[in-house]
Image (cartoon, rainbow, N blue to C red; front, side):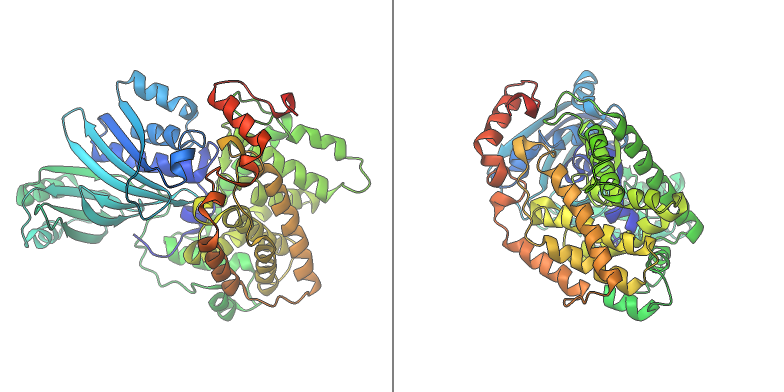
Length: 533
């Protein structure tokens, strides 16, 4: 509902399992909304993907099918049962089918959904994954809508529309204290059916829902819970919406972290202490994932065996040691956890989850810092991500790996400057330099898995962040401002060919070895890359 990103909705999060936030977390959130629209009693669902777009090739290997199935049966994104969601859904008697067809879509990550409940309620929906776990419901029951999963929704579908429906709904809501944000009346011009959608920051009371049903006589009424942690409609004016405005607002009198708190307090309505608690949970998941990943991970359905433990051999290397060695190890640990269905934070995406968390926590440990330092650094990174989310994309399917690892690198660079005591201006310049260094980076995942070359590119993103932070701290001049660099990112994203946007149709994915790995995985063989090296 809100057109301005939240650090916790679109940038740093969600806390999730699985390989890709665009696939697993977003699909799960879409599935949760369908679950609620069917009153929590799904019987069947068919999801269709456009044969011309990335999801037609990646929905299975990168986890869209798993995520949607998990959401449809009510799993949260951090569920330890998510890897078995399709089997669990089948055991519950929920029939889920995925179809690839030549269908018209306006976004590469489009889900065309038909679903039915045990009671016979039928539902149609068009939803898109926007990157980093963000979603948008664009059509419901054939009617155009715009829903982001960031409010409690009461949805009433009527077969015979009347012009007075929206006004009737408003009258019924007059005495409800649910902080109603929006009441929308959307009509299907061909068949006359309509939706009345009430968006609120708290669930409507049972009495109000009853009044709505009595007045509107809908074919069905459903209540949908938000899938985002920060709700729309806080009602506070944002202090800034661009990097230029932010520096004009705070100059160098405020740190980048302080500016991030100012933005998110206005966007969310939360206090600074509440935001610190929320980011504290995020930071702790990252820390736990790093510690677990360093010990080694195992998962059958992946290309690479655990890589993070190998970095111990670098500890006494005179060229790669201390901060560099720790950064490589921590990034690798997070990527190993992602590939083994461990708990991670998509920051800004699942495929790029290693760069920011690895860079921040390795810097905190190198500098002798603590969890509070990590919390503030992640907040600082988050406000940089807000500007990217607002004016470009985090989606590899839309913009290639520059949108994922490039964005993660820019966010990490700003966080590192903050940890080193730099100014907000220096942090913004570091982010711009890091993003400029990664423009044009393509997404050519091998064997339809978010592992290779993703791991190496996350390590590169973290080391690029450190180099860019060093340049900014030393006073290197940044020629192109961050806002203009983000615009350039968006422009380059539109120009990258489809084949190099997470489709597996070019680059490393179509090398002889890449194709051989993919063939073996499709045949159900257990694959470790060392076996065929």
